[in-house]
Image (cartoon, rainbow, N blue to C red; front, side):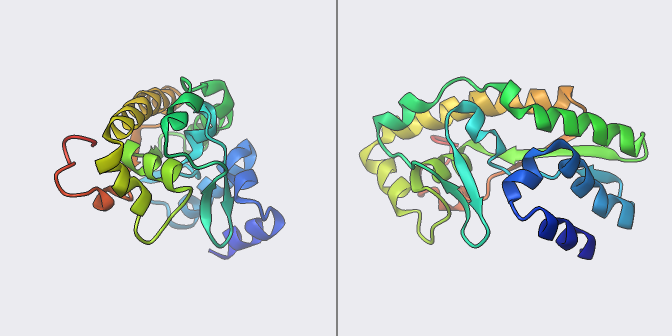
Length: 190
């Protein structure tokens, strides 16, 4: 949409656009105002909650999400802490305002990444072609890969509740890299 490209030119940082309440609301309303679908989708990223539980990341224009310090050891588990929802205040504020803007004429949708997908970013540091590191870990460090999604599931559950309490009518959970899970691990790790 031309209106989004214009906003992105003015605010080139995806992080700024996805972590500033008024920019989130403006961006979320653009397709809703243009097409009047049954729902307004909150402008965000599937990795938005990462920094709120100890994993800083950036979104680069060409590479996409990049974890500042990818980790694939016991250390990876030590940096994680319970999710601090105060660090995600912009999500809650945006959902409330978006709900007021659509005034019952549309549902408000929130979203986030699934535990396995978020784990792949934490371990790999970003998107890769093969997800080799996390696949190897399934065989060499299975205890880490059981603990990591377990922690992430708890944090994500809290984040889902936070979004619903802030006004989201529905939450989409994206498991973008679920297809990268080695055979035999479905039901064990996800």
